Length: 122
Image (cartoon, rainbow, N blue to C red; front, side, top):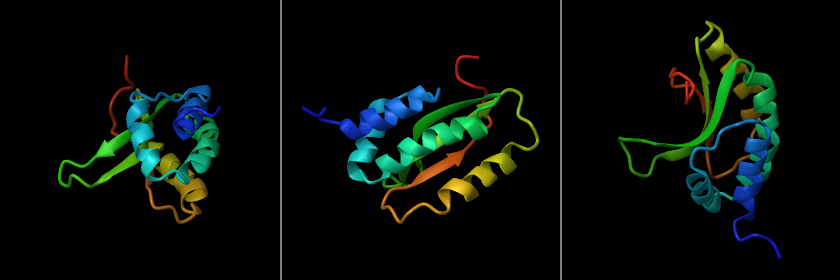
């Protein structure tokens, strides 16, 4: 029998297996329930993100909730470092251009960014 929220366990499992934090797996699950087609894509992106962005960084799969609009929410892969190198934004942009711009036309949204905060727990 398949787990009730198989898509969450797959994405969360892939993220954790790649060494990516998932602070609130239930929020990720809630979002992917609305946009389940994103799951297969995200499973493949997690190890690529760790390989290309993870050196010296903490990656965290989180939900972003806009303070300006209650309907504006999306899944974010947050890149956190201490200290931040000058090239962090160009690395994020290059990753986005390579792996996210060719993203199939899904209804949901996935974003890679940084909040320029220290990694959690440091």
